Image 1 (cartoon, helix red, strand yellow):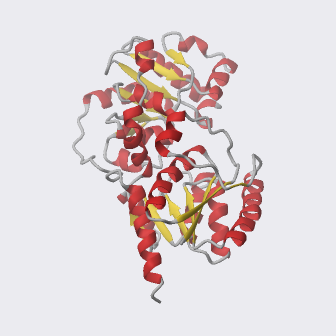
Image 2 (cartoon, one colour):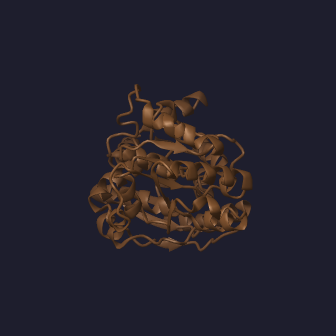
Image 3 (cartoon, rainbow, N blue to C red):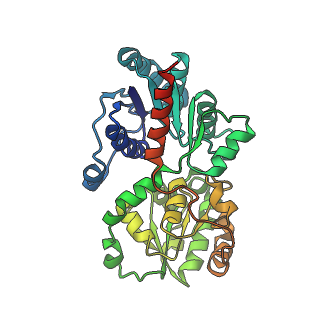
Length: 361
């Protein structure tokens, strides 16, 4: 059995690394193709040591461009690789232009496509990521869902064949990397456990809109007068704060440089809770047993808001939502929403079993 994994962004290479270990265990040949959609893989050496991240067999060198340019270029170059390698299955991850391009190539060449992180749905429906994930789910043979809600989303769209609840590969990653979380930042700034809040804000609808960014910073400023706010600030957010002349609202906030995954998780796991508009950090806070105020109109991780664990917030109501997080208890069952940390093993098992059974027909 030969499998091609197509990646194009940092989270995808991490997911691939988790699966690569399981594929090797089962003796499945994996060809790794990097589209080059995003090419900054500034990760700690610990990742390479623990996950044994492999070098791509092919790099398509796509780079940046419009959605059409990136998708089209990836399809053209990826098809050449597929025709050369003749894989039995193509594996794609998440919701990027690379994801959709790989799924379209596989579908057109009648090669089964497996979609890792299938069934995620989010408003608005015209956002590029939502379009990519919906279309990829429509043409994939294997749909590996990180949560039960994701499988239900597919069921509502009459997609039931080839759907598997495997759990979330990012939880696999969390458990593997937890012994290596770096808490040095806590000591550096003399932070005390459960006596500070971690916040990240970087989405364009929050940073590029002056009224939204001003409201967020005003709310954080209010909160900082009651409890320390630690803000690893994204370059875009920093730039826009200066551009809109909002720096007066950051004087009481501990503004620090962006953190890598290991340092961020070290910081989060000792925090009181999290305020963010990051899709990944919403889940990672949950993995660490911390609740999050999500400064977004909607989230792809509705399991957590449906359970009451995370709370959606407008920019101007973050302080009110903080009171809810601190004072409200969680009645809903919130354990193992994203599986048991063996998503990678389950995905490979489903693929292998289906492939082996097809050999008899």
